[in-house]
Image (cartoon, rainbow, N blue to C red):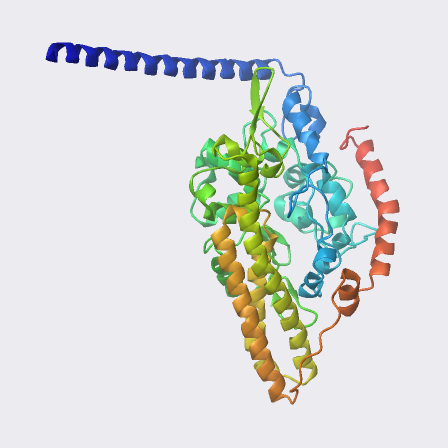
Length: 493
């Protein structure tokens, strides 16, 4: 009996080993086939590309599936409960945000983002970039172009990084013309994922890290981290810099900025030196459970797709909620409705705190203005301004991120709740300052029920802003495009 048992065990072990060998053989075979397929593509490329190629159309013949799905980022047909690819006027929905950004360009215009195909179109049309009629005019530096086009690394290579940043935004209107595309993430010759923007490499270097050691899976997030991060324009040269030297958390970056004495603008009402968060998507994603488990940005936003027996990454970069069957359900077995509601539940809870924080913070700015008007001194207002700065930084860091309340829901709720705490502390502190200066009544609040009323309250002349922008779009922009086509920088259509 014992001999028979051992015999069966031996056969099972042998059989199991053979299965493993068979499966490994299939994997190796599939890998070799894929390598052969890739080699065939590169050996027979119709467009041999050298150097930086910003014209996305040049990749269509050799990579038609990737190109065609990338073209779909032009679509504006998906809207979830809180976001999507449709441009929604956020200031109209949340007029308090106009007050929070008083004195800054975001108080004029802020919409939810559309797909990558609209990058050039949207930054050009935004009121935030002004209406420059020549290359030396306008409110924004050329650094604002950095994440909008594969023409940027081309220009950085031609001019030098410092020289590229140290210009006005309008200086490169006829050069930065192709929307976010192939060369932003891929080496034009090998199509390997690569880092095309220096700010990310420099941030790694200051932390003592070598980005060239990143794994292929890490690169599937790092190419996104070139742009989907918190950053600021450093010094007079407006050099694009990631404030990661002390760490990724909201407190780490705040300490970095405080040490540098940096602020994005002085608030028009409260006179607070404000930090404007950009979109710390990569940082927040790393704090959540998916990031901690090694899930990359591409896993959820560019899931694999099969077509004609070919497996490739879907370059229609969008919300995972638009394709739950290929994103969430690749790992989770729940049905689509359950998974979608899981996301919404996290968003709802974060949004509750956000709503309260925006209301209290707007009141804090308005009450601080009344304190200054009542004769408050800088010494009296010192603690008030510090608390408002901290509260607004936490608010902006928590809401500027795309999908932050899903990527790291606990962290986002922690950040927003700390912001609410500081906003309440600021209001308490300013009430004491008001009393010291003889103002004992309740501060009257303006009507902020619409974007137009809020913009009027902070002193914006929106009719003049829109008229200037319309003239710019009808005169300057067509001239930019005409020159770009004449020089071959933009494909004729």
